[in-house]
Image (tube, rainbow, N blue to C red):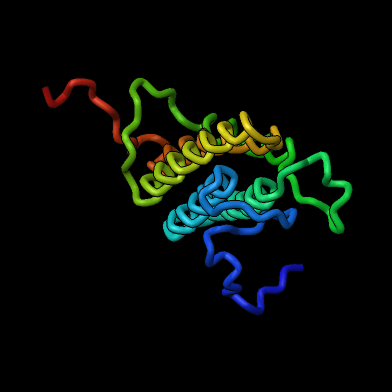
Length: 190
């Protein structure tokens, strides 16, 4: 259980922060930037949820929790040392990726195939889900870059890759099952 009885600690006033394993790194390090972007995606998802109801809101709540799991995973390098931690280390799992894939397949099964690219927009929920998609993609790019330099859980990379797809399909669901999608018209304004 996490206990936060003090919000400010002053330990980061010199521009560094603690990772999950206690190591101190610069706040601008790629690892911190990567999990910070995951946090940004979660905050953006909170805005989307203001416009969601029922099953969609429940699915988005699951993803918000997953994003905290993902941040916990990314803030703790050196997976090989997980067994030495004084507590169980939280890592993303393939089961979380599989759940996203099943949800994508189920949602997409009710949609007509696309005949054009979709512009971000339509309903408020769809527009926010597109914003979530782009932040998730940025997070994925950062995590993939991080993985070229440091050890990263492969399930974390897969999860972010599927998540942006999930947000895209969910945006179509939020646009009246795709009927309200805003379609790109190539060269329309020439």
